[in-house]
Image (cartoon, rainbow, N blue to C red):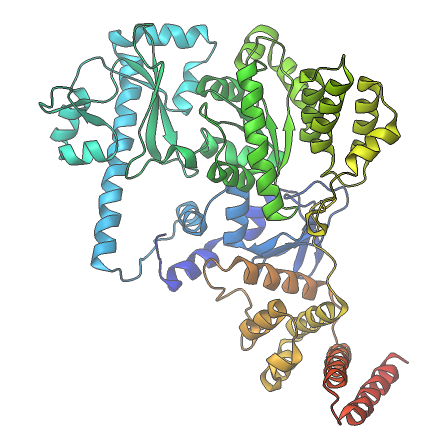
Length: 588
């Protein structure tokens, strides 16, 4: 990851109009001197639980727990890493970034990679010119026109055509100062079969640039036009800059629309992605014809919370969905409820998404998308359709296959509907289906969350957060208290202790020096700042929160003393009573 100076990061932070940045994602209304509120852009809700501090440039949602600073917001809404978010904001607000001093070897590697990326960019632009200006590309233009894709949409995706000659890219790149080694390193040239020099890797094919989430060309997918050219699709091989398993086609163009729609439409082919975007479904991306990898699923998760798998309904397509759902389920278990809501779109038999648009129109496709079914329902229906239900043994196997999909579901309307579906289709009683589901119990830590909200914090951590929020609301008094406190003694939660350590000496400007990439710290600081903006804070209320912390601290010390048979239990109990009396006086 590129390392930029702290001064650069702060100049970007200062330049950002945070109200404008967030306002592009959700309508904001003023709800206090230092707070704007709106519907959360990260989860579905009807009552606003999302707020920002436009001065400190922090955000927090009390519904789903999302929060952080300006960089976190761009990372979450645009699917970028920290460096990408920083660079994107710097470009948007005209801030010049400065790099930290680099190890010479690291600087050399960065420069070498930069040259390869520049070579790929200029080659992509060359292929675009050939497609639209060369007579040789007439057949390619005709093929694309038959697919119903406009020139404007094709140009948006930078679709091009590679000439049939053996050395066009080689010669043009050499004239521009690129070496043969660089052409091989980024996958644009390969060794001749007879070993006598290099030739262009891509020749006489429609070229689809494969970009990362920031829109940088890393490789190409190339479709043959002639039946004799094999393979039909030829992709860049994994190399110094390109790794197919890490990319999702069209993610760079879909990310803003996906953030607004809170969903992605996942298709298989390049032309499906292009056709759906042209049809008014801009939140579409493609798998590039492979089973989903963990890295690709991570990309999807960064882009949107819901993914609609719009796969061809043939046997191969159904198998691809099955492979993809296994990977998605594993991701959801790892992320404990902050994974993907994965749904399946039922396409007409013999049709891919582009066929539906071309034959039935964009509205027909959008209706199919709205009818996407939950992953569990798809898996149950698939198990029932594939099962042999004429014999008792076949129904047993179908029942167990369906149960595998239903067991992980929490008690819900969907679970009940699926139990009824299985019972009705197999001619069984619902009690028998329920007995089959009880065969395997899920581990407690795998229970799904109803809406991704955080688990309830214990009372002590709630008190610690409330105390810090009051410190932020009354920074002079708060600084005095934090400066005098033994933070290890006062805070039991590592999260709140870390926040207190960071905030000590920074209550007047809490977002000013947030360390790059520390998202947990950014989230809690954002939450505390937004909470502080809602408080009618007084020194007396801050004192009450401090007393509550003292009470929790004494309870913990007494419990420890009892476990160890300590003689100071009586003394600690008297201290506790004094604190309790002080709390009661302030509440009376």
